[in-house]
Image 1: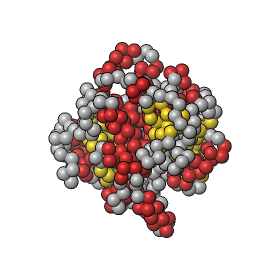
Image 2 (image 1 turned 45 degrees about the vertical axis):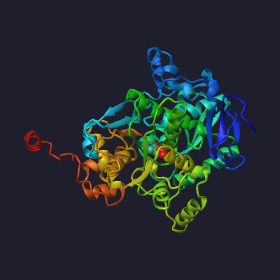
Image 3 (image 1 turned 120 degrees about the horizontal axis):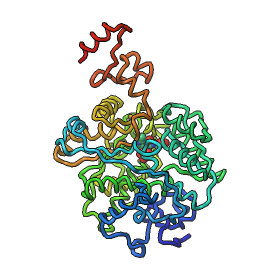
Image 4 (image 1 turned 30 degrees about the vertical axis):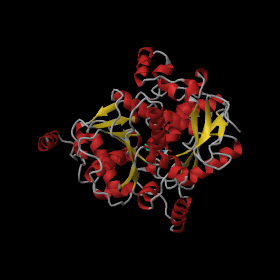
Length: 466
Ligand code: F0G
């Protein structure tokens, strides 16, 4: 099969390079089984020659495709005809400087920025990718769309289906730790919700089989169109920094879609001459779900020009299986041991001179409390970025004067159980709610004051605690 248009699908392995039409539905290469990119014939598409050009869209915010924080950059992801694009106003997300979090990380006070993706319509960064995959699904006439999810992808898919009425959402969740905030979204939006006995890795495997068998459109990030939408998170970061490239992008790593899309965004911008350097990328795993960290930092797995050493990956997975080891972290969104975008992520790490770290549940929850105390708030997985930045600063990998952007991937209200347990419970109560994980809540907890229902006692308690 060969490409037919200005946008096409292409095998990510340089040694293969097979191409497919964008009208095809596929998540891997027929010839070699590798992942696919969406690629473009930039010479004939002639994208803008300066990022500043995109500012012209700001005065046309009454047009949905200019208002969307994804589609106002449409010229850099030009695979869909305008009439097929499904937008619900995603990507209206700000980049906030944070003096408090800069101090916590150990950076100069004006050097830390939080990209607040929790402000998306479904409360997480997933909407950036969902609008792109959903538009592709609409292009090819899909009537049902499916995903496996730790909760945010499913909330996002359910919302696009519910608002557009174009498709039915079929979602697969594990029987473990999906937070109520996320589950409630899928149920409210009317998704067909399949809770299977198993964890996310099991659900992911099943949904691939089911979507193949029943011809249901798959929107997990193994779908290359998803990642096109997620590139725009980086475009908005640049836009907020007046098109200056920061020194570091720090992002949590789960299924590794975000990090992969960021690498693609920056290498395309560089190739198009729209930026003159790429930032460094830091990907932060949770310590209880640290496949990328283990493979990249401890076992030396590299992209290697499109020849990653498969033996390293296979033997690691065999070890996990032999030990019956399952992912386990309080950051349930990234509780994933078999990330589907591993190869693309290795490429991104090479393109952006990247590093990988792992953060413990303790580090994640402490960092989360500091994000909350700075006024934004995020769910536990998102705070892995801040925990990782702190670690890299302490190691001296990040310098105090470097400009660092941490991606807050999901809203604080996605998982209030973790927040409330951290702040108001005593240790025994925390262990009861979230399991005994050796997390000590003493450092930054803002405990609720217990007081009897008596006016004088309440006054005394306020005075005592002010
Ligand atoms: N942060 C949040 C809040 C997430 O929901 C996810 C992934 C990630 C980070 C990791 O991003 O997969 O691109 O590396 N959530 C998926 C889901 C798996 O099903 O909602 P990634």
